[in-house]
Structures are given as C-alpha cells and as structure tokens.
Length: 222
Image 1 (cartoon, rainbow, N blue to C red):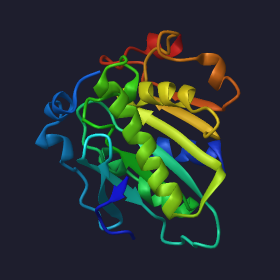
Image 2: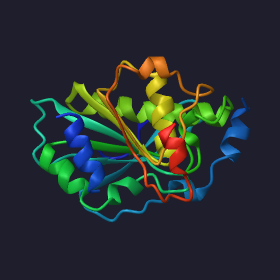
Image 3: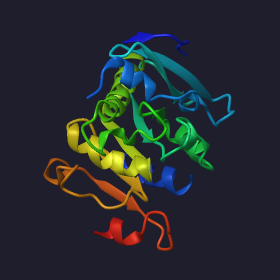
C-alpha cells in the first residue's frame, strides 16, 4: 500500500461512545463510483485521507480522528468504525458527541469506506467486490496501526446497520485482533457468514431499536 495523503477502558468506554453518539481488474474498477469518495463531515478534528489499493491501483478514502492528548510514546486505544449502507465513509464521525467522548477517553477512531458505500465489508458473499470491501478495512487498519502507537490490547470494532453486520463478519475473520465488539442495528448473525465460535470469547454489545422498521429487532435478538 502507498500513502497518498498527509499524515498527521474497554467496553464501558465503547458503550459511552455509542450511546452518545471474482472479476477482472476492469470489472472491479467499474463497480466503484465517484459518490463512493464523497464525505459528510466538516470538522477540523477529522482527517480525510486516502491510500492506493495495490490490488487495483485505485485511490480509496478513509477518515481518521486522533485525540488531542495523543502521545506517541504512550499506546492509545483504537476504535474501527463501519458505516451503514449508502452512507459516506466518515458518516459515523458525525454521531452527536462521538468525537467529544473519543477525545475525552483518548480513543483514536478510524472509519474505512469498505471499498464502496454499499460494499458490505465482505459479509454478502465471495465476489471480487466482497473481498475488496473486507480488504479495504484491513488495509486501513494496517495503515493506522503502523503510523500511530496503538495499544494492541484495546482495539475495538463496531458498526451501524450494514456496518453492524460487517462487524460480525470481520470480527469472525480476524478474531485475534479485537478486545470488544459492538453492533447497532446489525440484524441477524447467521452461520452462513459468521463463525460464532471464533468470536464467542470477545465481549459484544448489541444496540437495537425496538421500533426499527429497516432492521427489525427480532433479527438482533436472535
């Protein structure tokens, strides 16, 4: 991966943050649109960045928040945050109070795109685009953990809606990374895309509205 832009305790803290808050290369390129790179947040604390995905040569955006008290000599906790379907890659940075609490608790926050705005983070199948969606998240994770001093024992993953389902999937694919997980309206976790045994040992918070008409609560309760 080549950088193309400028650089710069646990579950209770996650809860606080959330409450407040295979084709050919040509075929792959055709699946991305200009709107996939649009952003939603105009906040000077949010760094809008990009990198070049080696597999396709495409420039993929992501957003990064580094707390004001960040000290390179001290490991900081990291929260990887996955947006909902159709939302911009930085959308979760706009949750009310989210960045204020992240700053207060010293969290680094990163929001990957997932290759496209509706990429699904890989949970929908095994197409080339599905694989790119998961790979984008892990590429961005690697970029941030190499650049910043991140506490390997305090790395968390969460997402909203499509991002919640993506949390189930990516966590089960890389269970050794995460100290805690959270899904907001993530829907039903099923065996066809999640290895439940792989994540059984990880603390997991589920938030679901009982009147949600898009993602019914029954799915999240299952």
